[in-house]
Image (cartoon, rainbow, N blue to C red; front, side, top):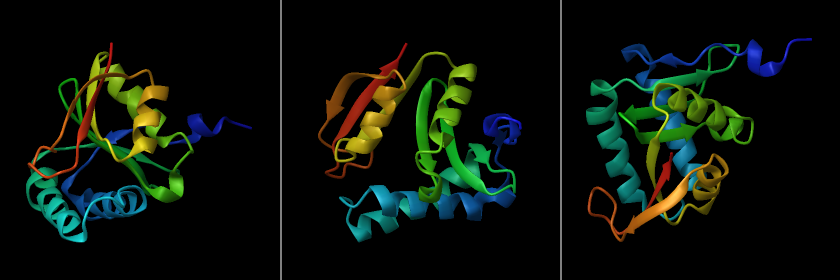
Length: 152
């Protein structure tokens, strides 16, 4: 019997046809892991994702054998701009696959993570990332501190 990881489709770049499903994965993931963000701010971030980020940038997609998007990662050089996994696929290796793919493209990686999301911080530390800094505000100037991590 083949290993499940070898049976999965390769990670691929998104297309415009994927935007709605990517947005759905993002919202489900954020709803499951970002309870510290106000509903108004969630709507604000989702609007940025839908109108600015996804139409302009391609993200790498992990899918299951049926073609369903299970997670995605956005890269800006060595910086991980985003990594979200559909909550129904949490703890099934999707995030690890995406990090491994990113590392194959860019061996030295940087990421920032909401400080109020200890599960995400623990995930990145388990992937070999180490603490390099912190800010009190996120990139939009909102009161969601960020922890900066690097993997070299």
